[in-house]
Length: 131
Length: 131
Image (tube, rainbow over all chains, first blue to last red; front, side, top):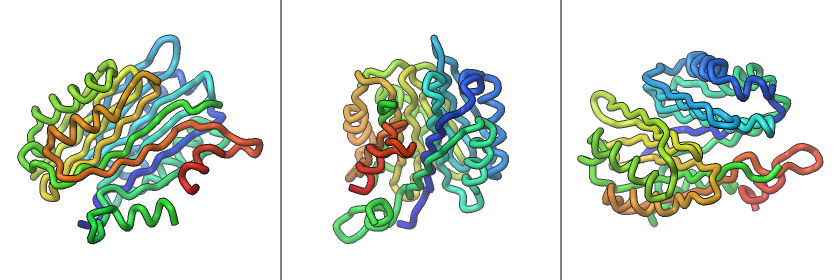
């Protein structure tokens, strides 16, 4: 079984707190992030919580993009999941980091549905995580 | 900055392939997975692709649950993201593993928005990843 998906887990720190609590701005930025990575948007849902914070997901033909914001911490957790070889989620990362005026970001890339060794474990995925 | 979110990345292998391509079954299972973990459902989107495969997301008050299925590989990638201390996503994992008749699963738990050390990096998160 080859690697089926690639998943970027992105932490954006020291962001513009006004943006982090602006539903329409975040929806626009996430959709643009999908477009700059060449993903095809299928559907999306965005929701603003009380007293603050936004959650949203863009389902794309190649998987999904998700975001959760904590304006009180200047922080956003962003996920880019793709099963498309042509999708460049690093462009989405760079775009969002700029759009949110993030002072810092951390990215972790994980292969999903990776190759399995003889004992049925995810050999290649584990190697990347711990090696 | 304390840890703000916990994220379970779940790989379900050797699943019932009919379930993996059944939009209404998957939507029902994912919503039930949210409920068994005590999350509060806000909105959801599910989509079936041609020739096969389903993507779906349940936005919950405590973050989200997402799924992508590859019926041709008997495989589903599931994400449980929560910012709620009372949410037990391991129950969701156990429920889904049974619902999909998965022969095997792999779970990776990642802290999101973790504590940062003096140089502004995610000390605790890195320690868990590489230690």
